[in-house]
Image 1 (tube, rainbow, N blue to C red):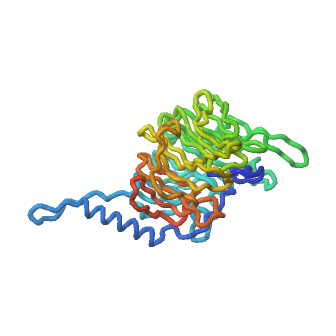
Image 2: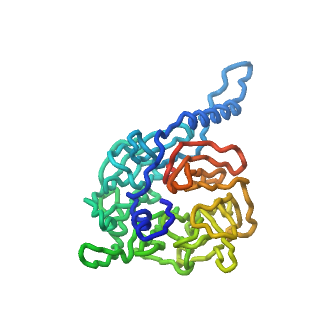
Length: 408
C-alpha cells in the first residue's frame, strides 16, 4: 500500500489504516479493448510457434501461451463500485472477481502455495479459496472507534511463504496459525492515553513482507509523526531496529527483499516528510546504507522508486536526477545498475513514467507491470500495463488495478 506521507492525519489514516485506501475510480475490470489486445498477441504468438505438420497432416496441439508468469491479483471495482479482489489469469486476458463483499475490501494477500486469499473487510480478517469458495471469518476486530481507528482496526494480512501462517496488524503484530485457528499477539501497540478518549500512538506495529525463506518479517513502525521499519524474527521473537539512514523512507510498503533475504531495498520518489533516494538495509544488523539521496545545499536531487535486486545480480529501479525539489510524483525513467545503485547505471527505455503509482516486477525482470494514474491528482492505482524491458510495445491488462500482487 504505497503512501506519500505529508501529515499525521494522512499517515495514520492512509499508511496504517488499510481500510482508508482510496477506492478505484474506474469500473469494469475486463474491458474489451484490453482483452482484445492480449488475445491478438497470444493468438499471433501461438500461430508463429505452431509448426506445419508433415504431409499436410494435423499439427500437434500446442500448450496455451501465457503472457504472465503467474496469475496477477489486484484490488479493483465491482459493478456496484465497491473495492474487491480480482485476478488476471496467466493468459493476460481472463479476469475473475474473487471476493464479493457488501463493503470495500481494505487490504489482502495471496498464498503462494494454493492461491487462497486473506483479506480485510468490515474490520474482519477473512479467508477464501482461490476460486472464491469457502469464505470464513478468521478474526473479528469489532466496531471501529472513528475517533481512534488505530485502536481496533485490522490491517495488512500477510501470508508466510509456506502458507501456514498469516501475520496481521490488530492492536499490535499478530500471527494466525491456519492449522490450529489460534492467533498470537507478539508485539503490543504502545499508546498514550491523554484522557477524554484521546489516544496518541507511541509506536504501532503491522506486517509488510516476509523474506523469501520465511525466516524474517519486515514490519512497519508507526509513530505520532512519521514511520520507520524493523525486521522481526518469528522463530526467536526478536526485533531488529534500523540503524542509520536518517530521513530515509523505509516503511509503508516501499521496500523489497533480495532473493536471498539478506538485505532489502527501499526508495523514495519525492521529498517532504522523508527524503528522496535509494537505500539498502542489512536484515541481520538493521544497518542502513544510503546508495544515493538528495543534497539541498547543492540542489542535487535524486529520486527513485520500486527497486528490485534481480536474480542476475543487478539492481532495477525507476530513477530521476534533477536540480529541483519535487514533493509529488517525479517523471522517472527505467534504469539498471550494479547493486550499489550507481555503477553502470543504464537507462533501459526512453520514456518517462510521470503518472506511475505502483509497479510489480516479473521475477525474471523481462517486464514490469505499471499502474498509471488517469490524472495527476490520483495517487492510488491506475491502468495496469505490461512494460517490456526489451522495447516491445506495452500491453494493457486492465483499466484499473491497485495493490498488485503475484499469485502462485
